[in-house]
Length: 359
Image (cartoon, rainbow, N blue to C red; front, side, top):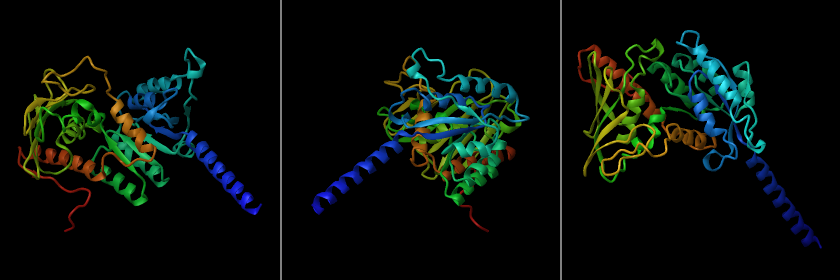
C-alpha cells in the first residue's frame, strides 16, 4: 500500500512539474521598445508580434514601448508620431478576430517600461542617446538589443559594452545588412570558395546629421565583416574625395577588404567577392546569393527578417550573435579611417578597444 502511495505521489509530482513547465512555456518573452523614431521599431515588431507565430518567432512578443525621440535629430518628432501610430494599429483590425494580438502599451518612463518587460530593444535614431538609455536597462539586468548604431562614438560604444560585461547582462548591436542572405551567404558560396578578399560598396550620406557622421559607413563595414568572416583587421587607410570615401582594411592574415562609400552617382549596396576558386558579385540587400553569376531580384524580399530572427533567438535565451570584441573592432576601424583621412591617407594601426594595451 505504501509503495502504491509513493508511486502515485511521484506521478502527481511529475504531472505538476510538466504542467508548470507548460504554463511557463506558453508565456511569451515580453519585450519593450525604448525610442521609436527608427523604422526598425515597426519593422521588427511586425515579425515578433505575428498572429499565431511559429518557429523562431513563437514565444516572444513586444508588449510595450516608450515613444520618445531626440530633441535635435532631424524630423524625430514626425517619425515618432508616424511609427507610434503604426505600432498602435499593428494586427489590431484583422478580418478574423482570432488573428488579433494584444495591443502594444505606450508607457511614460523607462522605469515603467522595465517593470513590464523581460528584455529591451533600443530604437532611438540618435546614437548619442544610447549610452544613457542603455545604462538604465543594463543596470536593471534586462537583456538588450541596440539597433544600429550601437553608439555615436567609440568612447560611448566601449562604455556600453563594458557596462554589459560588468553587470553580466547580454547586450549587442548590429546592422540588418550583416544578416542579409545575399551577403552572409557569400562566405560559403560554391562559386567563390574560401574568401580571400572583398570590395563592398554602399551609400555615404554627405549631409548626414551630426549624430550620424561617425557611423555613416556602418552598414557596409558590417557587410564587409560578414563576408570576410569576422574580426582581425590590423591596419586601415582612407582616401576621401567629393565623389567617394574609400576605406582599405588589412586583416592579420594578409587578406584585404575595401569599402567604397558612394557620394555621387547611382547608389547600390553590394560587393565583389574574391575567393580561392572564383570571383563573384554578392547579392543585393534583402535578396539571396547569386547563382552562376546572376543576382536574384525576383526572389522573396527578406530585408529585415534575418536580423529579426537573430533578435528572437537572443531574447529567448540565445547567445549574442555579434561579440563585443568584434563590434568594438568595427568602431576602431571607423576611427582609424577618420584618423587616416585626417593624415592624408596614412596607414593607421587599429586599436584594440575591447582589451586596450596598458601603458
